[in-house]
Amino acid sequence: MNALATQLPGLNLRNPIMPASGCFGFGQEYAKFYDLSVLGAIMIKATTEESRFGNPTPRVAETSSGMLNAIGLQNPGLAHVLEHELPWLEQHDVPIIANVAGSEVEDYVAVAREISQAPNVHALELNISCPNVKCGGIAFGTDPEIAAGLTRAVKEVSSVPVYVKLSPNVTNIVDIAKAVEQAGADGLTMINTLLGMRLHEKTGKPVLANKTGGLSGPAIKPVALRMIYEVYPQVSIPIIGMGGIQDAQDVIDFLSVGASAVAVGTANFVDPLVCPTIIEELPERLAELGYTSIEEVIGRAHR
Amino acid sequence: MIHTGKMEIVRHKEIARDVFEMTVIGQHTTAMNQPGQFVHIKVSGHHEPLLRRPISICSIDQDTLEFTMIYRVDGRGTKLLSEKRPGDTIDVMGPLGNGFPVVATPDIHAWLIGGGIGVPPLYELAKRLSESGVKLTIVLGFQSADDVFYEEQFREFGETYVTTVDGSHGLGGFVTDQMALFEQKPAIYYSCGPHAMLHAVEKALPDVPGYLSYEQRMGCGIGACFACVCPTTTGGGDYVKVCSDGPVFPAGVIA
Image 1 (tube, rainbow over the protein chains, first blue to last red):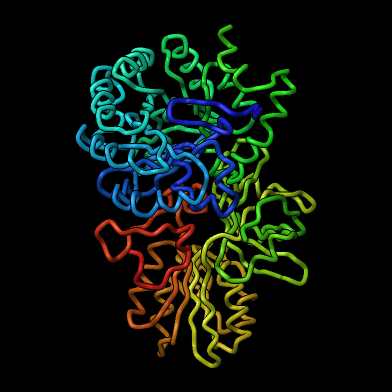
Image 2 (image 1 turned 45 degrees about the horizontal axis):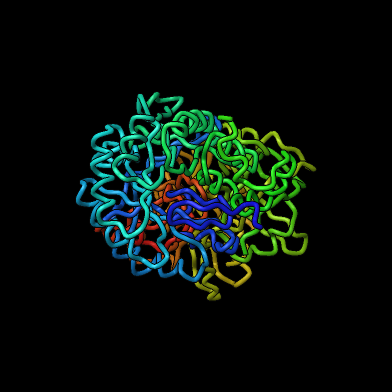
């Protein structure tokens, strides 16, 4: 038996580790460092119907134990992803979770309908929480009714299970989680980045051209753990957890509060080999804690 | 091949105001075969500061497996780096990016134009072009006399001119002011420095083939995060990533 195996809607994972959307491109850069088939899954960069250039630079700024980004959903557009990126990924035996973004409900629906039919796309991640775009993104993720409406519309057209990526930039994340569950979401991914700002020390002006950006990295791990801890007992759909994961113990922490699998984001920028390293170290860490499978760890903070 | 892992510092000293020269030793060096590439350095073993720092490769010695970097202290990361001592190790990822093509046509005349912390990658390039018999004219621009470094080292490879913005050393003004004084244009030019300087250099040599190395704030350093994109002259939302498509681009590519 594989101690790391786990099953989620649409996803038969050999291990619970996957790179988070936006932190791994479409995989090609990391394939220079290791065989992508070792991963549980890959969450590819957000795809919109048309290509997007994104925001002006500077787009990233380092902060205490974290970083801000305001990339602005730069991507080559749906057609390119379908013709080039996804076929390239097919050479690797790894399920793809396609992150779907847009400005209007119709955009999400159009991308979801087509991308969910790609042979290696096993699930969608609905991006209703990107803080760096003027329309869409986070606007859909802060109101339970709007989030539910979008989830319903995408569920109608998707050929694969739909996970909704929740924003932490809300007063009550449980309300949003319950609303999208009722609307038919098959799972949740949480959390996206926290809205933040950094200033130039000399000028007092924001460093990012977009002024604000999404905070990620180890700095946000406590927020992510708290939010998953709150949502887990209130929903019956599985959660993929993310927010500052860097090592095997971080993974254990996320599983403990209720995540069934995890995504690693910012840490890929620091160490391109972080995902395979965690996959290698996780069985040992489980054994040290006296467990034989990750299933035993999921939700233990609540018991 | 891109190496990741520890390298040992063998020499480290301040060579101008807030500018440090660091030489490290290790297997990474074996993969360094072109001038103008960079390495991505993690200055601490913890997550503070979190990200790596991109630093250009200044010179490469395959015999000793050493390579040298020159960087300016400009924040927390480089401050911590400057406190490292010979014998300490640093986590290096590299070499990364695409360097300068060494156009090795003997007796042609090339200009090398560097600005501030853009000067270092031109050093390995000067070494190689000079070995190939290319005649070099080198122009190095700095803010002030206290900031000048490697003037003597470059002199070994060709006529070297220094400009300072405040006029405290060499010609007062910018590198383009020095370039305007030369009577003949080169067959090719290479440049590295701030974006504004590269634009000015490009404008001053419109009919000459050139290669420009760009600086840009980076995240991952390998092309995955889209932090360091630059729009291209073709417009229409076309872009390049400085870290993995560059940092060196032919003149006329970046808007």
